[in-house]
Image 1 (cartoon, one colour):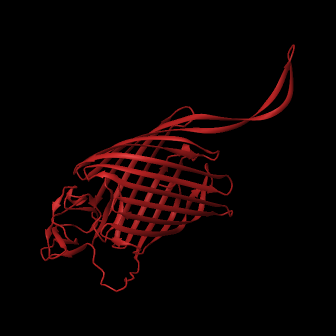
Image 2 (cartoon, rainbow, N blue to C red; image 1 turned 180 degrees about the vertical axis):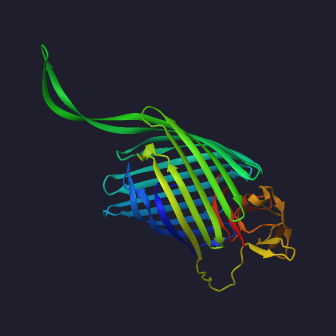
Image 3 (tube, rainbow, N blue to C red; image 1 turned 90 degrees about the horizontal axis):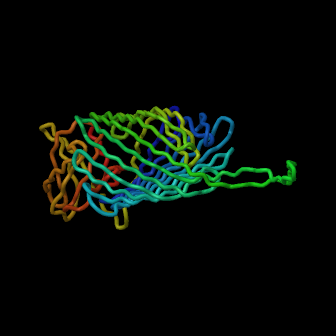
Length: 393
């Protein structure tokens, strides 16, 4: 969560730049007012613009996000981040994910900072619980040049009585370059000190810290909430911190979602960023893009469909060619796989009783990897890389 606060209205413009069974592209643009970093140590009210691009192709996921803030005094800050992830092996229950994270920011008053980190994570999960272990190496810049960075993480989650409980811990170690100006003197007997000049000394000092965080998630129909509480301990050069935040969203319509977030964002010592409070109240509007038929023109193939059954149930219908077996699972099945049944050439279906709301869903074809169903918006997932976002009216 970015350390800014204020009212925020985001227009999520979602053109279908590429969308097939296992590839999807999404573009979003946000604009509004909030509280943003003015430099690495302070924040202030600003006008914000936030573009974002997400791409999922098979087991590969790319996500790029930018931000531009203009403050009342005319100062500008810009930031950008990108994440590339690859599902190297495994399925929903056992997997290895490789990733590359890049972050950067530029401040008109104080220059910039950045981070580049290559990561690897192994995960193990079943229908109601999961755990992961990972680490990474890279470099970070707090404004005085890049230096080495090492990271470790471990975590797990479990579903208890309709509440998702997560616990994670991580450790980071890095070097910080510090340049000081010292006087050069000549000592003459008996005790005479004669200044002869000044010189610069650049030293690398080791920094390290460990974080722990507990999260509680709850979802009922169109409403979802998450509470996070965390703390940090570090060596003598990294301050101790505590933080808490609450995030929530309410699906108002298939294309409209209200978003709320408040709390405190932990600092990023490796980038020289201090801890900041934040508050967010916004509205996400999804606008479908235009489809351009290829030559020769062919009718577009529908994605996942939800059909109301006379009994009050919902029938999920998915187009999949050449499959012998299709399984479906989601948060509404407690991540237990359910067999779908054939529904004519190239289609599969499953009848379920679902209340209106926002759900997460994946499918598996002929025992292969779990993937996002065609036609659904992908959202990040710590185990399979991405899951589909399904809206039930």
